[in-house]
Image (spheres, rainbow, N blue to C red):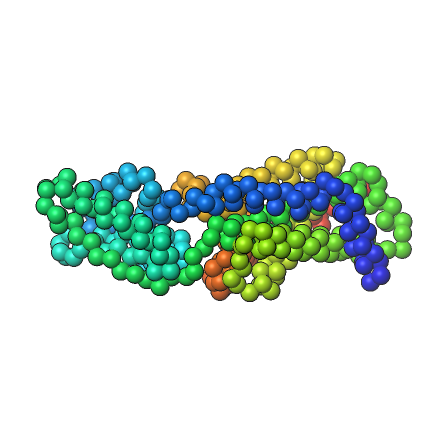
Length: 356
């Protein structure tokens, strides 16, 4: 136990003495959060996400859909299931949901809005009503060719951009520790024969490796505590869900990505090659997994690739709990998939690990 604690303390000292590690682990995520938040945080209400459920399939719904796509402030998202579209509205992922009924029903077009987001909803409704009025005049000159009926739903609290961004930044920090920190340090220890010297000491090798894992887990908690403190005090971000659940997700993600980092270090001969390989995996995941913007913004053909990335389920679970206060249950399959990545990575690392 003493050797385990000593290894963790040694790792802490090495981390805080290395200015580059402190920069990439603490300063870099804060700088990213500030720059992206300031660039996009004030403009998130200028674009409205509109879910479109077409139950009619006729020329009226097609013309309505095409016309809405031409409205600059509307981002139209095709929905196949009305219940799922309304659930997305309640969770703040949509500003409006438009349901076009079958043309034979004679019913008006249903427009649902979120009562919790008064300013955005009312602005989007005014723009929609103006669009419908102009469309009616273009169609026949009569005022009621297209009739709409609005219904307010009680959604969740308004999600500010910094509230959305913070869980992604925290998950990115966890991934960064494993893919950029562990890979370089472990491969560097092997290259400088430090691992070989450990074999000549009374310390059991597994205790040393366990200490390294513990060191990165605690380092992540320190980094996260600093980032969260700055986000809450400087950027007025909020965490709605249970902080203990969020912390548990962070620790879980840490072990997974530390395992991936160990696996990368075992297939790299030098610290430099390990760092390059870790970076090649790290940066695509950072930009594709929804760290800075919703994954729905990415093209449809990329969604299967995004869903297969190990960072994606961690970000989605953390964002659901921290930013929206959702229960963790619906995200357990994704977290199990993340755990499978970690188990496979540790298995690969164990089979290929070399002390020299």
